Image (cartoon, rainbow, N blue to C red; front, side):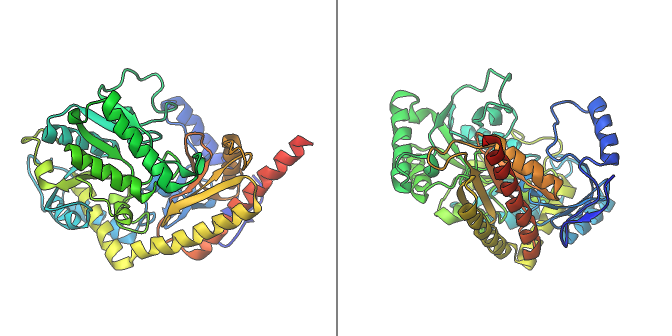
Length: 457
């Protein structure tokens, strides 16, 4: 074990990663946990608070991942912890459809007015983002009595069968799991940074025209039940579309009686500086899916939308044993309290602006950084080997993140080539923690660039 090294005010690395205790646990993991559960961080968490994580060897790291966008209110938010403890002492489970409870009804009542789209609205609760997406499709099919679904290039909607079919990326999500759900069709989604024109409006029009062409040669629009779209593509690389593209999708959906499903699993709950990302674009979806930060880490998801659409499935046509668990519902109510009383939507604007400014500064100094993009606290930078060719720097991104981990910062990649570094930190992360974490990322970029320069020599 090396001597304790305090990198900064918050980061303290007492060992290399993995440390002695973590190595013991990883050895057990290799014996008892399925290989599919590969891990990003070479250590195991012992406790966490806000944006700080302490591992089993006593190392303290800054977490920029927020449990992959789950912890918008931060690790162990005091309101959420108290709500969970109080509910756990009352009862843990009944199945709402057997013996219902008030917290689920109260949560629906509070969420419905916050959800974008025409009203009146109703909601239904599930366990995961993939379940929410699958059930949104089922609801749309019940409402329209149509079989087909439109999804998009680079989309990610989950890993269950329908959600995996909607998801674009083959590895690691789809390889070896065919055949997929039939009647799913994939359309272009504007990626302005990698487009020929570089013009958002031109690319929006091209994508919309391609969808209209699909209706002529690929699928009859009168057989399409739903268009499922992320208002910002998350796993696809934090790709922000032109507003005119999303508004054009809404127009097409209305024209053909198609249910427009806004997948806000990653973008929802304040991440983009609005409670839901659709608000940035004036989008009025029929259905909205949500999960991740809805309950600060407890398994809960939901579909909300137009009451007449939500009521299309018959009694017990959707649901499940654990959906809308009472402990998770209480946690979600505490999350809404935190947003109201702690001003977390405004905090997302504050923290996101600081992160973006630092990323832009890095772009000025580091040739690896090709693009910086995002909204609110959903910010990413895309790494390229050459800014002219925009060749994706996937291997370099992995080395940047590995170096950052060893120096006390947990961050994740995204994008089809794994070459985007994304930030999903708690919305209220303090400025000095942002700066300390991004100093490490800045140093990591410099380290990898110097390595590359030496290799050329």
